[in-house]
Length: 357
Image 1 (cartoon, one colour):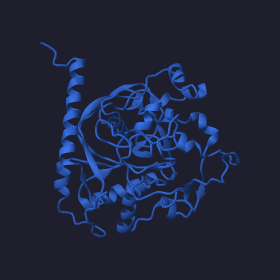
Image 2: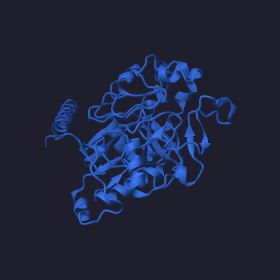
Image 3: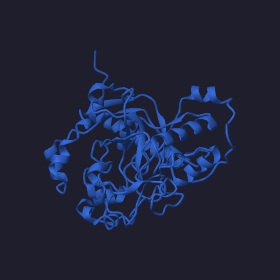
Image 4: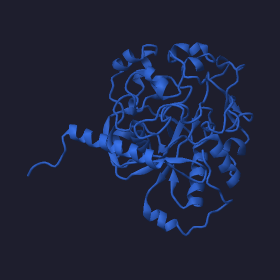
């Protein structure tokens, strides 16, 4: 019997056609906004290669400004493995913004953890010296002066919300699920990387060159380095015009039409972190370990060096961590049976008008 497996060239062509069709669909109809003004893009089911296979010596040549030891600490990015996402899903076109999070807080009465426990978050303070602290952290905190309302630098309502915990992100997703009758959640780590790569296998969606991020992502560049001159060697050589966060959607989108998948703010994902996730876990719709101590965050931020803003890089924090670099992006499921089941639900909390971003 003849094999029904498509040659790799035909598979690539098929994926390219699917991406083109998706792009045309999004352009023609426009992403649909929810009650908080969040826009979502439909991501098709598919398969991709997850992880990083580059050897330390290859990475050392690509990022000569970094110490060699850093390239030996990436065991959790391997082995590279083929992952299958069986169901289409809708992912936020942008990261959740300050304005959207504020509307959620006002409508729901939810008190974010940085305010509820009284310990605050982290923030930028030009008078703060990292060398005076045990961890040499780049930001001051935790301190009640800092929270999602104040990360120590100016933000507009169209900037990504930061200083939010994994638990805060869960609370927002749960509230939207109850009020809208559609299931919202954080993406799994696999869904996030699949959406970020958008059919590519390179370090970044645009290719392997870190300097290309100036067009595609708000990461640590010469605008940011002026506030941290000791790390100027790690900065991209050019300027993107933003020393801190940027309004969402100011940089080029990837092939799926998603903005800021790299840079601007780290994004919480659903999974617990483990070093052996890729070698021990399933390859079809992986959910990550059943338990753990720290949750994964992905994508890098405005303060992230290019090496740590790769599609395959994994970082993590405790679910209670609130940090001036960390935000979120939500996923909305497209399971019609769930939507039908929830169609009779009455919204809880205050009613919300449809708002434009």
